[in-house]
Every structure is written in structure tokens, then in C-alpha cells.
Image (tube, rainbow, N blue to C red):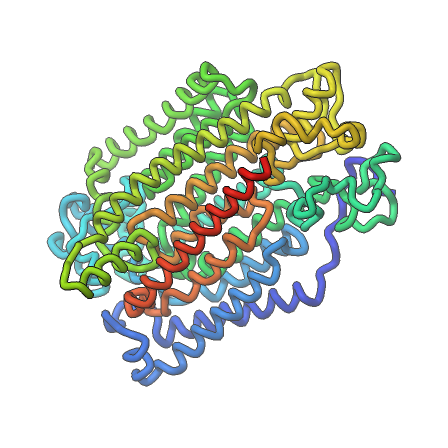
Length: 603
């Protein structure tokens, strides 16, 4: 019998997991080979197509290595999407897969050359927010994709400073690319350090990760008669397999090993954040670090200031991080969710964020000119952005009747307005859930693996249990848990947390899950989508989402969008891709409306 509080040893590594590790490693090696044969090398021809690549001497080998390597890497990652054997195993495997890509040429994009020219521009006293790489006289202009040669930098001052530092350290182009890759890897390492602590502080319960039995609608401890009626937690009964009986949250490391696996071992991470050296890695590292400070030290002014500063630094790398800030305020509230508390804690966190924006803008000497540069991030038109796809389809339909509606900018503008509404809705939903959890913070209500009790009475205990995913036998048999928070739709298995201290973890999870969905909405409704954008919400979804297929599948599909030299397949499949994306969007909307109607009828 396992003693309460004792660490549970990791399960033995299965043959399937070992096979996935080495299949993924072979895939990473093949992708590195594809990079050397036909990656985004400085002298690679621009404007290539799959056909023109195939006709080159190394083209067949390049495309074959890329396709087989991507299939192996995606398949290995997918096979363990519910969690690696252990957190350490996940770290080691992610590191093994990253090694070949760490020494490969740039893959999947030529953006790193744009970074180099933007850093060179700033290092030579020219404002990169008013002058493009061509006008600045960057010596590496021929390596930059034509669409970005006359475009001002669309990134914040922190990244411009980092790019200039890379130029100063690297000297020439090769050294600069190496330095930029080191900076990207540093961002990933920062994210890797934060993930286990975030999983402990706000991760989805182990029972929901492992499939115990949230999808069946009953708490893990009540499955198959395990042994709530005997007054002990199922996981403490000797001989009962963990996957059948351990209450959610008592399987050591399950949320962490899933989060580490999904966030660090994914094919987009290796190809685009490591080999491609995209600055999204730095943004993610700072973002997760700021959120960790918030959930570990909620309500403390110094911690909120520090968290705000870290989030501000993330915003000054890539502005899309700003959508997380309102949810970070919710995560930083330690007690009752009232408007007064919201204003008090929000002021501290916002103060840290504004301080970071002001200091970095002043230190760079560029002021807030970077805000205007953000408008250039949507200069390209690709069907991988749903709003752009819809606009393209409208334009194609107009062309059939001799019209030119120019619908893409209109649909993009509507999508941005819709994004604002979705973000407000997500924040209000999280606030509403947290207001429903106010009683969970009351000292007279105590939660444990076998239920909640206290002097507050059965109704309050039932509300706490409903909102935290715990249903004790007494409450379950009385039917009290079916009312209150649960019946109002506030409770969700996404926020279940049946271990001791569940209210704090449940509150943090509500806020971080809202932040994850905000990033999803930002990716879906933005004017442009590139494959590496799918990494933005990946870590937070891996931490807080009970089900994985809905976000792992599109992430896996995005790994096939970019060829080794940076050729985006969306560019050569514009019309069929726009039609397919629009059809997919309509299908999702119809299913969502049907689901909402069904739930409304059930109420």
C-alpha cells in the first residue's frame, strides 16, 4: 500500500514509447538532411514551387527526406499526445529530437534573415520601424524574402535589441544566424523550466489527462465502485491500477509530462522555433514565466509587478502576447473575486507591464514607433488564415460575375472586430466561473480526494465540489451537486481538481485555460497564419485542456505546410485551399450551433 504523500514511481517505458522516441529521432535527422540538401540556405533560389524544387538535382531527395521526416516526427508526437511515460523522459526525448535540428540550416522559413537585417539596421543607427531592409542597405538583403525587403520591422523593441545583439556577437551572416538560434533556444529553455511548476499550480488533473473517466461524466474516485464507500481515496488502495482508480491529480507528474511533451516535442517546435529560430520561442518563454509568477504568488504586489514586467517583455517581442494579460490579472487574484479586488490586483500587474513597455521603448531609443509597424504583419494573403480564406472565396465568387469586391481587407477587419468580442466573452466567462468559485476559497469549506465538507452546509459544499470536480458519496447520492454552479454551466471537467487545495488550483486553471482560448482565437481570427503561430496556445492548452485531439490535430497538420526552403504550400494552393478552409469553417460553425441548441434544450 502506498503511503499518502509518497511519490509514485514513473511507469516503465513501454515498447511503443521507445519506438516513438527513435522514430521521431530518425524523422528529425531526415529533416536536418533535407535542410542541408535544400533548406532555407542563404543562396537558395527564391520563389520556388514544389515542381521547381523537384526538378533540381537534389530536389527528389530533399522532398522525400522532408516528407518522411515530417511524417515520422508528427506520428511519434501524436502517438504520445496523452502524455509521455515521465516528465524526464519527455525532456530527454524532446532534447534528442532537437539536436539534429539545432545544427541544421534554417528550415521552413526565411524569417531569420529578416531578423538579421532588422538587427543590422538598428545596430547601424537606422530606425527599423520606418525603414525597410532594402532602404537601410542591409548587406544580406538577397537572403530576405522579397515581401519583407521593404517592410518595417513588425516586432517590439526587445526583439529588435536582441537581433542587434546577435549581429554584434555574430559579426557576419552565419554568426548572426547562430546567435539568433541561441536566443530562440534560450526562450524554449525558459519555457521548459516553467512547465512543470505551472502543471502543479494549474494543470489539468491527472485523471482527466489519462482519460479517467471525465468523458464518462463521473469522478475518477467513483469508478467501478472504488472505494469512496470505504472512506479512502482509490489511489491508496493496494493493487488497484492507477489508470482505473487513482483520483485525478494524485498520479504524480501526469499533467507535467503531458504538458512538456506537447509543448516541447512537437514538430513545429523543432522545425520552426529551433531550426527556424523564430522569435515566438522568446515570447513563449517570457509569457510562461510571467504566468508562473502570477499563479505561484497571487495577490502579492511585488510578484504582480514582476509578472507584469515579464508579460510586458513578451509583448515587446511579439504583440500578440497582450491578449493573455487580462487573464493573468484573474490568475493573480488570491481571494474573493470582486470588482474592488480586480482593480487592486489589476493595477499592480498593469503597472509592471506599462513599466516594461516604457523602459524598453526608452532604452531602445525608438519610442513607440514599433506600434505602427504592427500593421504590416498582414501584408501577405494566405488561405491558412480563416478570415483571409473567406475573403478570397468572396473575391473568386465576384470574379465569376465580373465583379471585384476586394473582400479580403473587409473580412479581415470584421474578423478583428469579432476577435475583440470573442476575447471579451472569454474573459467574462472566466470571471463568471471564478465568481462561482468564491465559496471554494472560504476557510470553512474543506476539499479532499473524497469530497468537501464543513460548517457552511451541504449546499455550499456541493457548489464547491461541483466547481472543483469533486463529488463526495453523500452529496452524489442526494443529488445536491446537480444544482447550483453545475447546473448553470459554470462547472466543467476542464476545471476539475479533486486534490487537497483544489480551490486555488481550480482558480488558476480557469484563468490559464481562458488565456489559452484567447490565444487560439487570436490565431484563428488574425489576418495571417503561419505554421509556427500554432505554438502560441500549445503550452497553455497542454496544461489546462482535458482533451487534446482538437488542438493537436491542426497543429500536426500545420507541420506539412512549409517546405524545407521556406516555400509555403498555402501560396501554391491558394484557390483550393481557400475553398477548403471556408468549407471547414462553415462545418465547424454549423456543428457549434447545433451543439449550443442541444444544450439549450437540455436546460
